[in-house]
Amino acid sequence: AQSVTQPDIHITVSEGASLELRCNYSYGATPYLFWYVQSPGQGLQLLLKYFSGDTLVQGIKGFEAEFKRSQSSFNLRKPSVHWSDAAEYFCAVGVMDSSYKLIFGSGTRLLVRP
Amino acid sequence: GAGVSQSPSNKVTEKGKDVELRCDPISGHTALYWYRQSLGQGLEFLIYFQGNSAPDKSGLPSDRFSAERTGGSVSTLTIQRTQQEDSAVYLCASRLIGHEQFFGPGTRLTVL
Image (cartoon, rainbow over all chains, first blue to last red):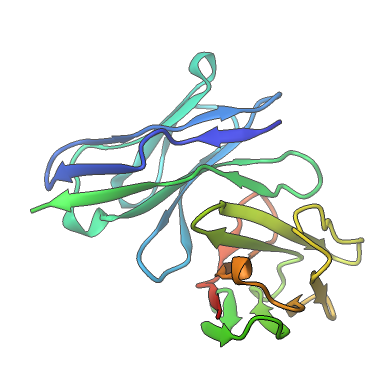
């Protein structure tokens, strides 16, 4: 069965520090992978996505993620965190039947220290 | 252009009552999804509509939950005889081509 694991429930970083949020997936074929961000009281906003090709993908707001098939991982990174990045981050895999429904990880809440 | 909209933004109801939640997808988007976000279960898929095809209802947690999509546009999620465990944020998303889903702001449902 498909699944997504985000092992870190909370992460706290200082403003200006680098960030890496972990995501591991279980899927039988080449996955479609996504990172979404949710600010308090808001819906989900797509940060970036991987379908095929270059395994390092760039997204909005200075985020990037690297697909590593050998590790079944799709970690999200940012070189310098801003206070406005404080939010909850969700990794998801797209189910490749006709629906492309998303299976989400449990999320990682990012706190940013001034 | 306008994004996905949902109404109401908040709904408080009493246990046993029925509720209807509405989703207006992005104009022209043929695919529409409902997800539920709750403390205990995280974000989980409920139901998927694509054009005139039969919906994928595989995520609906019980027969108290139903949804319809009229005219290929607006969708309504109905929960009958609400229970406290139905308290959650209900998110709607739509998709055109490709695989990116655009999410609405959600409806926060509280069952007292």
